[in-house]
Figure 1 (tube, one colour):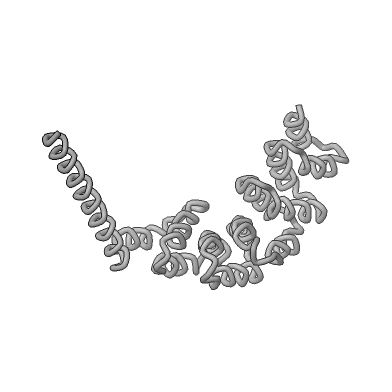
Figure 2 (figure 1 turned 90 degrees about the vertical axis):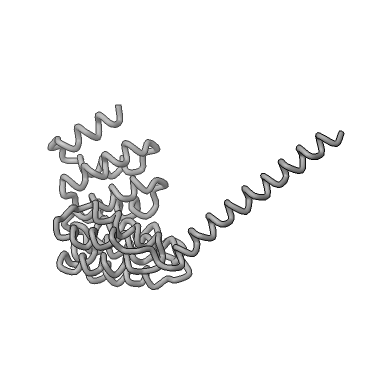
Length: 224
């Protein structure tokens, strides 16, 4: 019932449609919240909607809902101040904020968002925030994204590299293809190869120990 009401407001011309959709952002049903956010974005609602969507983009419990709210925010005339508010968070919330900042960045360009992403990439002790920052590659100008993709995938942290590669799916472009082919052709870092060899060696040792225990059990059973 509430979903049908949101869909009706989305395409209708009621004078209070935006106000009612703003109320729906507080609904307990995540699907109602997501549809209300999308409707506000399509309607090009005013500053109050931008502020409310920025709160959803930071505070919704599900990542999917936060991303959808951020994408809707990017469609609004008053997106800039609300998007910048996403960067004013505590360090503990950087990873969540960077996800939403990245979603805005594919549609809008903002120096403040770029600076926030660069700050996230510099957090060497916060791997989750670093990976989220790599996934926010959309904030960079289109002409700079391929170079940034190459740079991020050259870093030793596999989570950062994977996040950058995964992020370009948001807005596919043939310009990424040469870089992606290069990335796939790269050899794994020596540390990764050593790690793989160590893992295989460890498996062999465990297998050898199990075989030794089985032989001992068989000998023991024969002597009884």
